Image (cartoon, rainbow, N blue to C red; front, side, top):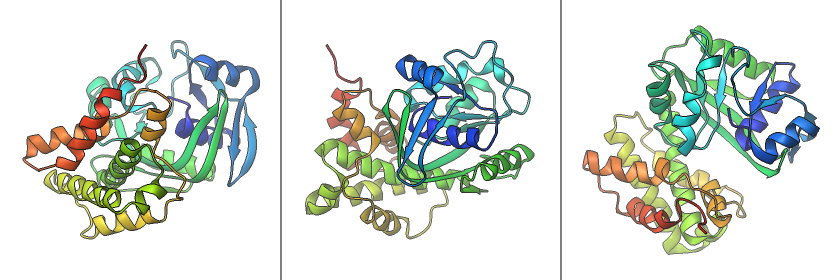
Length: 301
């Protein structure tokens, strides 16, 4: 559900492994996939073209064994509500999205226990309609939100393994979600506010200090939310960010530069509101949120 960088890349891997995949897309992207297939241009694996079934609407589509839910966070409720016709009694909806509350939104639409939490560790974007550019990585961490190892999770893990997707079936996926959330709030916040790459952020001492401050604030939110984060998560997050290729920007920053709608509410907006609710100060996060909010709806006029 959603065939952009994440959904397109992992969906193509599943197709190449011989699994039956239906991709949900729209507009020129959908038209090109139907006409010429989906092209993956990978700096790691080389180029490939796959020809999955591709639809805009799910009415009439076969029941799904599993759903990889890869839409932008601001489309979560609407996209989840469109899934009813393809869900079986135990069909998991695996969220591979930015943010830490998408699973709750999915369950609110589809019933408690439907969603699985997931982290997609991949750098992939739509380069052109029907074309996915894969720069690096390609790993999935996922699991049941209650920590159990279910039959449906094991079946999905086996499908990923068959597709040669490095996979971790986690018993504490909320921690994995928050570890990504901490990182992405900092990378997205600093690269979007500055309109610069992560390399420039690192080379500018006050901006790099802002990066660490955001990491510290979001970590405090996670701990106040009873997430079992490692004691050194701040240092490890900053260390990881030091190794990101200098020319990279977060997808939030890319969307800002292209005048697209931003996932701001799922990232800094959610963190700022959670801080107010929990009594955890988040001045740096709020400043980023306030600075980007005028651009959240995308370019107007």
